[in-house]
Length: 247
Picture 1 (tube, rainbow, N blue to C red):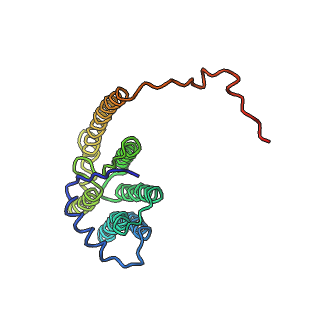
Picture 2 (picture 1 turned 90 degrees about the vertical axis):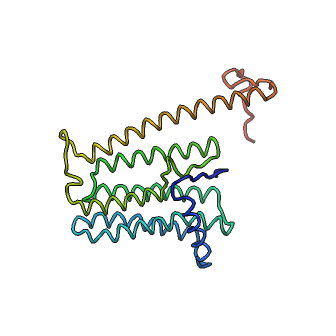
Picture 3 (picture 1 turned 30 degrees about the vertical axis):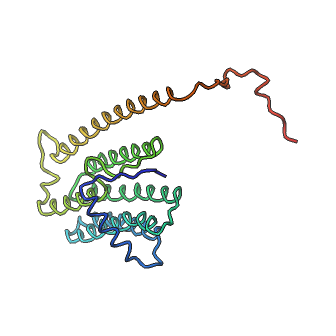
């Protein structure tokens, strides 16, 4: 769908080397759809692992394993399609990004229902993820540009952040989600503050994009020859709205 894919995340270059090495070693019977299914399975496994952590921190093994499978499937499905030149622009784009939305929802909600986070903070994080995803898809439609990262953070960095926080919170104990300040959970205050700053940054970016698009469209209009303006449907007379009946 997009004419250009831009990934400027912190790990993008090293990750690309790893993905190219992996995709060359995949068996011939493996398809992008298989990898997409593996990614979704990994997200579901992560959710189950987070729920299981209420009984034992040992379930963190499922969390980390699920995040790895989600990375493996999600990162390699498109890479495999491009490597074998079997891209399906519309089907591939739709299934890839709809799967991403489902997978990230499972992961973030799983974190929220785990002992290591609060549900309110996780839903706030999820809302910001969906907001940035909507912005990404708008850029694809309006400019043909698909950004895979913002501020150096991409999907891979996000998975590592989720895993790192879960392991840290498990070592820290219940204080990670119970410590309070001014009558609020400290974790919620921090996530709320960061989310507010992110939302303000999003508004600034939108304003800059709109100003740039307006300048570009004015330049294009000045370069186009004057065209004979056709009457709009509101200006058309009654006769022009009459269509011949079917035989």
